[in-house]
Structures are given as C-alpha cells and as structure tokens.
Length: 170
Image (cartoon, rainbow, N blue to C red; front, side, top):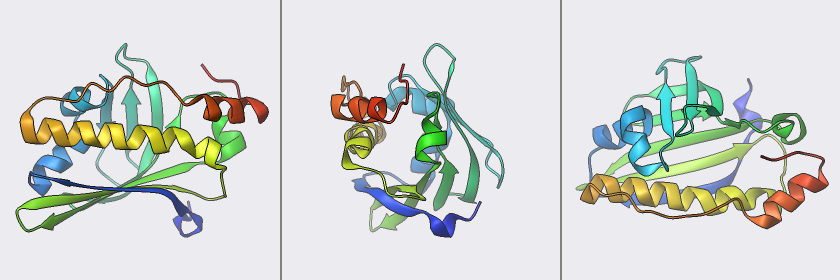
C-alpha cells in the first residue's frame, strides 16, 4: 500500500500525564483498551503486516486492518476498516496513525485519520465525534484509573450521507 497518497482528514492531539510505554500499552493491549474504548478490545500483532483487530464487547469483529508502521513507544500506523458492508468499497481504506512524543513530564499523543481521497464533512463527522471521546477516556484511565463514560451513537448526518451513497449501516 502506498501511504504517500493518504492525507490526514482528522488530527487530534492530547497531552497525557503518563509515560510513552504506558500510552503504547493502552493503544496496543486488549485488556487495557477495553477500559477506555467502550468495552472494545484492540488486538495488534506488532510487526509490519501484522493484524490489527478491534473486537466489540460481544467478541464480534468491529474493525480490521494491518500494521503499516510500528516503532514501539513512538509510532503506530494501521489500516482501520470498520466492518460495515460496502464502506471500504465506496470510501476507500482508512489509515490511523498514533504518534507518541515525550513532552517534559507528560506525553503528547497525536492521532491522525487519513484517507486516499477526499471525504465529505458529513462522512468525517463520525470520527470527529468519536476520536476525542475515545482518546479523552484513554487519558482519564491513564491519569486516574477511571474511564470516562461517554454515550454516543454515530451522527445522523454521517448515517444520512452513507445512505445517500448506498452504504448500508448496522
């Protein structure tokens, strides 16, 4: 996959009172991710070409992909394909990159969601709503031991835009 064709559509940066090692563990550990990712479990084979999977709380496949870049404690880039019929066919693949940087006594975590084609703001509204909630909960778990409970559903404008493209949603 030629990732040079992918351009960031969503960039979210957060500062976390933690270490790069703990942030890395939070992003790559199923047990840890369940705490902040609404019960979803991230499973990563930490090698180039390794599997990237997110399982829903019931164990079903929610997101699949593969590892594109892996620099432990610094950077992880994965393909991030939500398990909705026709989504990838119509919208193309998604890349998600996590960049972890020490910043004095805290960690700067930047998440980039990138695409190889332009997508409408309506389509991107799901990520623009979801990423801040997920990463804020990750920050809360690392700093306090308690996740944030943020109830949300996909934005209606995103669902309407997908429907207009002929993409069935769950």
